[in-house]
Amino acid sequence: MAETTAPALLPGGFRDAEEGWPELHRIPRPAYRVPLVGDVIGSSKDTPVQDSMRLARRLGPIFRRNAFGKEFVLVAGADLAADLADEARFAKHVGLGVANLRQVAGDGLFTAYNHEPNWQLAHDVLAPGFSREAMAGYHTMMLAVAERLTGHWDRAAGAGRTVDVPGDMTKLTLETIARTGFGHDFGSFERSRPHPFITSMVGTLDYAQRLNAVPAPLAPLLLRRAGRRNAADIGRLHRIVDEVVRIRRADGGGEGDLLDRMLDTAHPESGERLSPENVRRQVITFLIAGHETTSGALSFALHFLSLYPDVADRARAEVDRVWGGAAAPGYEQVAKLRYVRRVLDESLRLWPTAPAYAREARADTVLAGEHPMRRGAWTMVLTPMLHRDPSVWGPDPERFDPDRFDAPAVRSRPPHTYKPFGTGARACIGRQFALHEATLVLGLLLRRYELRPDPGYRLRVTERLTLMPEGLRIRPERRPAPTQPQTPEGAPAD
Image (cartoon, rainbow, N blue to C red; front, side, top):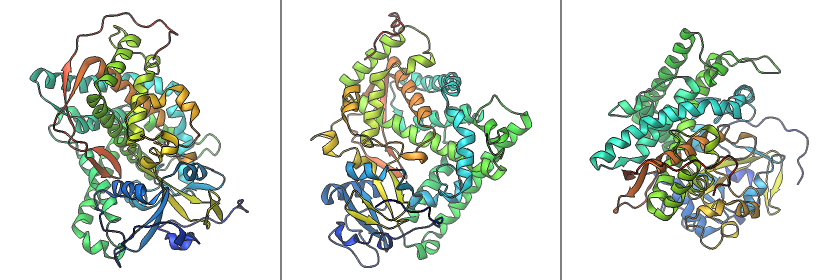
């Protein structure tokens, strides 16, 4: 059904599927539904994504769930997700856990409603901060932060100790975005405990998820103490970010990074600037989104590299061949690690650290020619199951295989089947930043260490709106430094 004239703006807030899906009864749901609380049998408040993955395997490419009277629809099939990618008919929907983060991030790039003007203003002002030229400028600072990580891992390797992979990747990615984007050093690797920013960030993410696990009218009562802690966490995040901005203003500016753009750059057409409150919200958004998902992606990739030594050997050989004996790789050399990038892509296929994105109908329409949707009706794409659709990924989608992302395989797949960064105009603005950082770090770690897994470890995935391997430890062993010459410019890499 074609979109009609431009509709009035839709309000924010939860919209029940009963209101937006005229033929909701045709969409499968779990067999046993408990009055008042919904589809709780076999579910855990701590693992809603993994619970939904299990339901998708049973119920099919589109299904619905109910939590405390909130009815919503989830999509796991490639054909449905491809239709939802049509920007003329669908837009980003801010709902559930993401909307809960508006307490801390307001109308930041990730949490803004589509009708809020600050999203477009901030996007247009900040997009040049992720240009190729800007990325090349960040590369040196990324290397400097990575040296702090390898110094920490060298000490562990010398003592024969394991390392806390998620903890160390979180320190790395926080310091990287803080230094490249805001000229700030949190001193994460010098601390014996997580920086207060990390502690408060985890607290706000956990609270946002917990809000979805209780009836909305009872949340103030059932989560009274948690709500007070959340308010304290938000206050701490605001104070930390306000201090970063205060220091920058006192210094009279930086070196043209994201914070300088936020403070000094006017919109190229309107001349409008970001307000102080908007600057705070965008800094919080970038500090959280700019490190949380990347740290998870690196952690999952290192888990798979430790489990599959043949994959690690092949990736390591590529690093040695392409980077050769250079003390540090140049910016251009990172993009030549094509197999390392495939390892990262395959890790994000199986465990996309941003595990879902929501889409809403711009006008009355029919999803994939089968499911009527009223204007404003929304659905959530369950990305880990989209990435496991056998019609796209074959009969063994659970198998880890980086060659799924060699060039011929990628060209053979239909569009909109791989979505670790969301879709459309509201997809992640920092995608290239994250991919460059993660590929660089994997290359550095592969060149420097053999990655030995903990024999007793079995992957457990923790959920705090993003996904992270829980309790993952690896034992790094130092390798001799490579001495072979670099691949000549333009020579093919794997």
